[in-house]
Image (cartoon, rainbow over all chains, first blue to last red; front, side, top):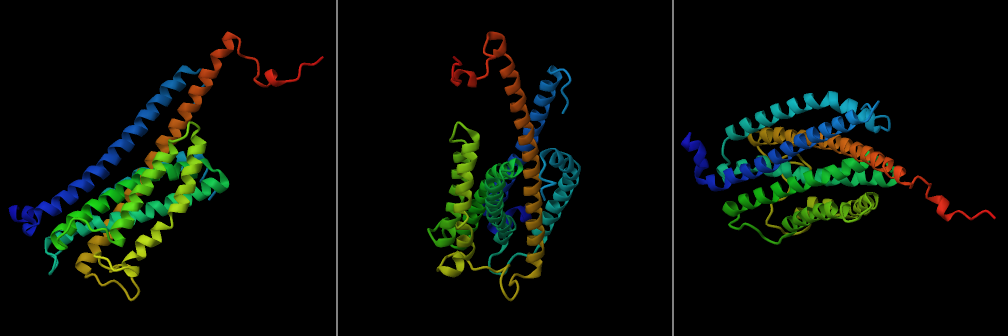
Length: 55
Length: 258
């Protein structure tokens, strides 16, 4: 396991590269889902106020 | 094509397809990562070759996203289609993200293998220009009070800026660069060994699918946000009529009838 983490002496280059990809792509994923849910909730409450409004 | 470009139909179809696409993306990403870390280290580059499994797919996507953005912008300019406009606008930050990953991982790969984090050579510089083109597009969209004008100006930038895409692709052939020439997509077949090529291809497909999933979710969110804005506008317009502003605006300009 520690041999795997050491990446043949290149751990300082390999793991940051994967970390950057994880942070950026993970960030996009969380943001996209949160944005969609927030919009869906806002639209629901907006339409609940309008009589006869449907999606 | 136009049948699927209807926003209501897009919401319906994408809602059905999206969960399956998300599952497929997760599976391919997991498989790609496992294969990537199981691949034998390169005889020259050792373990740093694993950086390639994210560097090359994000480089492909950085060019692919820009091309998609330029195509969608062209469709938005020609047919004024709202979905094309939204697709271009929602692709831009994703493209910038893939470009950033490509630049940072390339730097982290270059440091131990080339002995430098950065050089101002053709490939690296043109990829950096691509990053700024994405940022310019995003800034331009929001630079006008009238969103339609912002999108239109940004669409023109997306189209003109596309010239950079072939420059990046062929920069390694046209100029002497520190970056290696094409080894995967080249005439006469790939020069990359299968033990490396297969995980790389899986990761490339997984990254492409991830882009598609993120784009669809962002487009769906954007469509809902537009609907919210339209509904709020109707509510806001309903209020002033109580205060005596119900007169249609053109009556002010109308000739007084004698």
